[in-house]
Image (tube, rainbow, N blue to C red; front, top):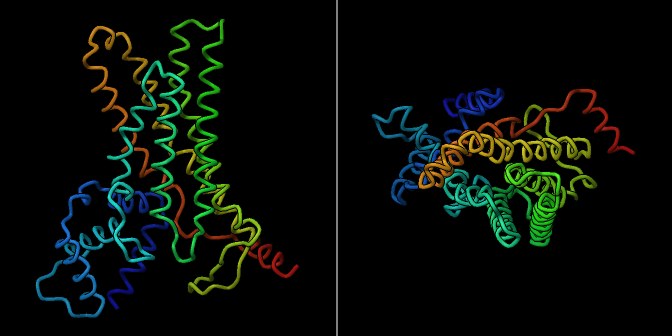
Length: 308
């Protein structure tokens, strides 16, 4: 009975944006990266004891929630295996921030642009794969297809925009520098959309599973697939927006100060990138619930499409 109430409570919390935000702030807590193997085993054992009603006396609810947090941050829910540290959601900010700093460095060359965009998309692809839905097997070809599409689109857009800006004779050198700092955002956002479209295009033709209120699969729907892919694509555009736009705006305001204190440029730039990344990640992944609902009319369309 207590396990049932905890499950219901989790569902209610994730039914609102603030509830999901609180949940994901816990999941991406970088302190979980330092959890020892013994501590992880103790947490899993504690949760198993709770599930089977064999908890030792004196265990508090805080200890149970902490154990749940650690398990969710480290163990893949479908495979039951540990996620490699750099590719956990809790490691996304610590391991991704150096790449963001590199992407936003001023005066990028074509080679440096290619390298940083490639590193960024490689890291994103590994994070996506490590945290994928593993209830159904994902062919390696789909992963490689999405990865190649994301890298190609990101590099093409970033290099193309940089070349276009450098050849814009009407722009002053100062304007070129400022505009070039905004180039990573459209490149990364477009690459993220390409990655989603290539990795999940088969869902548009085959549909995805649709469940009733009791969690029973009642069929598959292309309407639900379009709905899910659109939400995912929107999230992938929102996530890089503050990461690649806010630091550029902040650094432009600090330009005169940094020109006089060049030694502070990299530390301040790094801190701004880390701060915006840390704030934007939980907000972006909390925009939509992991289990979306379809309105009755949409569900009827979904059922009708399967009978045609």
